[in-house]
Image (cartoon, rainbow, N blue to C red; front, side):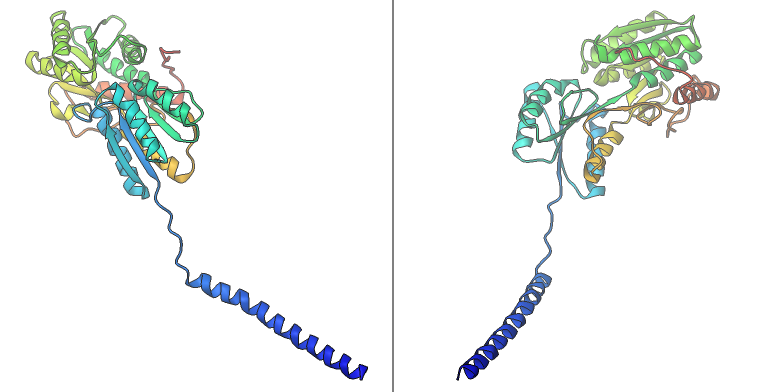
Length: 347
C-alpha cells in the first residue's frame, strides 16, 4: 500500500513539474508578443529659445542671430522661438519666462543681457544658457565672443592703403571697452600700412542715434577725411547718409552693407552672428555643447571683411581697387598663420 501511495505521489509531482515548466516558457513569449505590438515611444523635440535684448529691426546683428537659430531649428528638427525684449527690464522677465516654460537651451546676446543672465543662470544651475558677443562666467553658460579687432585691423589696413588724403576717420558708438576692439584694432591696421595717416575718432554716445552719427561724420569730413568707418550700430545709417551727400567713402558692420550703396559704402567689417547662433544650436542637439568661452576670429571664419574674406554681390569700388584687396588678403593670411598678431585691447 505504501509503495502504491508513493508511486501516485511521484507521478503527481512529475505532472505538476511539467505543467509549471510549460507555463514559465509561455509567459515570456506572451510578454514579447505584447511588447512587439506596443507603439514605439516618441521623444519630444528639444526646445530652444533666442531672447534678444532689443527689437529686431534695423540692427542686422540680432536679425542674423534669429536667422541662424531658425536655420538650425529647421535643419535639426528642433522647436525654436525668438523673443524680442523691449527694454532692459524685459530681458530678465523673458529669461525667467523661458525657464518657467522649460526650454532646454536659452540663448541671449550682447552686454545688455549680462546682468539679467548672471541672475537667472545662477538661480537655475541645472538649466543650460548661452550668450553671444560677451562673457558670463558661470558653469551653466556658454559664452560666444569674437575677435573683432582682427577684422578691424584688416579694415584699417585697407583704409590706409586706399586713402588719398591721408586722413581717415571712424564714428563709433560708445567709449567703452568693447568698442576698443574696433577703434584700436582699426588704428593698428591703419598704422601698419600707412603710418603717416591721421586718424580721427568720435563717439556717438549711443547705439541708436543716426542723427548724431551723421553730424560727427560731417565734422570728420570737414577735417579732410576721405574714408570714415561706421561703427555705431543703428547710427551707421547716419554715416551712410552723410557719405552719400558729401561724396566720401565709408564702411558698414556685421553684414555686407556695400549692397545698399556700393558707390559710397565700399567695405564692410563682417561678424558671423548667424553662423555662431547656428553652431550653438547644432552643438546642443549633437551633444557636443560645452560651457565656457568660445572664441571666433579670422581663423574660425567668425569675423572678416568684404572682398577679402568674403565675396560681395557689389562691384569692387575703384577707391579700394584690386591691388589693395590683394595686399590685405596677404595680411589676413599672415594673421591666420600666426605670423602677425593683433593684440586684443581688452587684455
